[in-house]
Length: 142
Image (tube, rainbow, N blue to C red; front, side, top):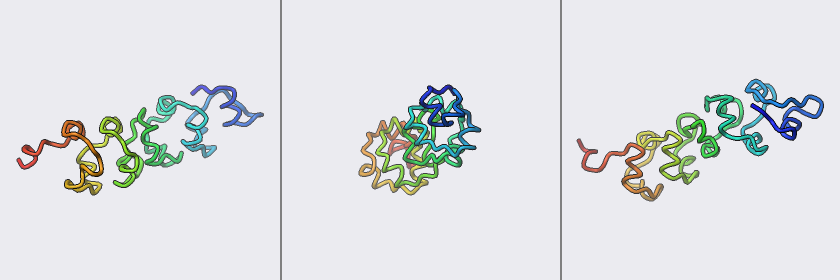
């Protein structure tokens, strides 16, 4: 991916500045996703460079708290970033964001969400829960 002169200098050093960044650079230099985001690198460009969010988690410090930034991948905090239910709740995501991350109602239940507490944890309408794959109450018992 292309870098500005400032980004190139900060990432590669003054004497070795190159106008691009590769996934091999990220791995070799131990660059972390938060630092890359801090330098103004766009999520969609980073996702194009390495589309597997699990690789970002394994080698570049991507954590559940970065799931919103990683919507361009998309990165599922539960499946890709090692999140537990508390991590997802801490994001305070909207239903649209959860859907964009690929999170489903079934995954939330598997992570330990109890049906009776859905409304307190996430204040979603029935339609919003439906976006995440929750069946309406009458259809759940069939």
